[in-house]
Length: 141
Image: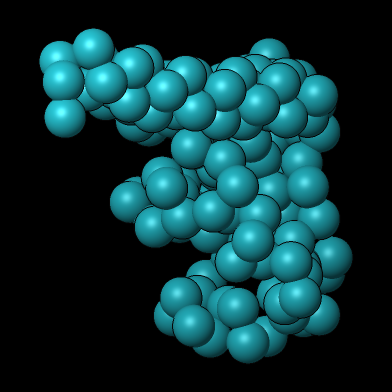
């Protein structure tokens, strides 16, 4: 293989990587509210985005209702950088069991489809945002 062929192959691979990154960023910028995650779409959705914050909640949970507006506000503000999702644990018990969710609200941060951080309880916005920023600063888009 000549050096010109090798260079062309490298350029093609890099172009594909850049196109995938641009498509992912475009998808994320369209998200301004949390995605409803269910047992049928959970795995695909958390793998689709480089960083996703997921709120595990239930309608009867008072602290969850306190956190919900914070999550919705952050989804608008971080649109294009972070995807947000919500899992109703009553309707999606298999997901909550698979992550060992025992208290709600539980907020998990996923990177590349893997859980990398967990926050439990009705935390203030500043604390949630601090954790989110930590993961964004360690993530290259």
